[in-house]
Picture 1 (cartoon, rainbow, N blue to C red):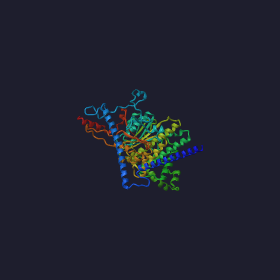
Picture 2: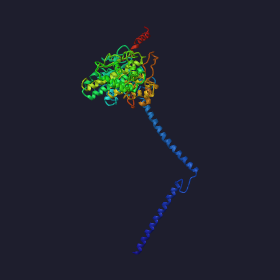
Picture 3: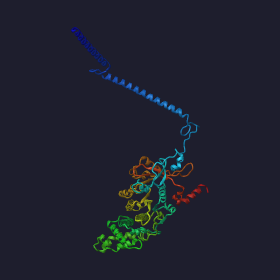
Picture 4: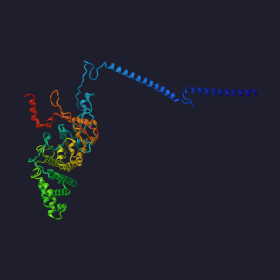
Length: 575
């Protein structure tokens, strides 16, 4: 038994040693094979020449692999193109069959587009295209970038929360449709119970439209028609009927501010210079004394002169004359000279020296026709423009105050001032006047539209004046930009972040008309009726103003040339 156990133990030991020997041999063989397959063994280094050869061989193999992959891609592409070409030969393309005599056309006329409600166009599906923007405001014309119409205006966009204030500015070279755009706005406004007030029409451009609306035309010129700068219409006398004392005082103070701005602006024009601070104080106090008096009708400029020359104590305190009449007279001498110059013997004639000839008929469209004033008389044009603008603004403000008190029916107004450059060029002081008036209108929510030709119209004598005038455009919530040359854009690029495409489009619209060599007739200017609508620095919307036949009669601004046009037409036809 003991011998058997011994033999078993020896067998186990022998088996153990055999397994260990076999494992050892296997490890040696695996290490030897790994060493043979590795070019650089542990402890061995390749020579530089051998390393370069190895890298070169690897690069060649990589290039072959990439070439094989590229060739397979190119082969697939060639196959796709071949199949596509074979398939296209069995059907016509977008413009017909390709090839000579196969019916291929170079131009495909676009299908006519129309707009209607879903009830009207439901049977045309899927060919009806929806409008691309919010349908808010006056319909202006066709969108030049996408299907549909552009609808926009300062007042209804303001009421819908799109704009921060109801104001617009229109810029474009002459003859490209500024007035036509504004007339479209006014036409629709009148239909929507917004009353247009064109406060200075120097050509005229709006008389025919306002007449067609059943509105009122007020003509002013040297020797024909008068407007009292101290008179703000028949409604001003009814301010005392407003029961709310705070509201009544607010309107009276506003009217006094407008009177002061009116008279100060006229004095600056007559003087062609600035007004002194103490003179402004004297005017304010003298107008306050006028307001305290009882007048059967609105006081005149001569009444203001009478108050100043009477040396009341309240004015003496402002002149600091120490009770000396001579010193008082010396302090007010220049102011009295300028006020006297506004009378019938001054440069403006009796335009401002007599009672107002025609008052605004509240509730009707109104246009102030200044076309009878000679274009060379910029000073008188600017003076009348300033007074009519202030007069119209004040009448609207008083009407709104009375409507809030329930004394008159409510009404909404939009004020239009065309040819703004005439006021700005007449005198540097008019810049401050226009700035004050536009700020007052903005605060009271009255819609306003200012119009001029180019940004160069706002470049004035000094950088300060230019900055103030440029602010008219920058503060306008809605800006319509027509055709402008590169040198006429001013700071539009930075203020409204014009893109290169928008700038190029505006420059293309400024091109003059050309002669059609086939017909020998003048082609329509490329930019006529085209505008870019800009709201701040957002991308603009280009559109083409589209008129309906009923609007054509009141949009002809070349009536002065009509006789010559008929004569040329007769000559060209050989009659």
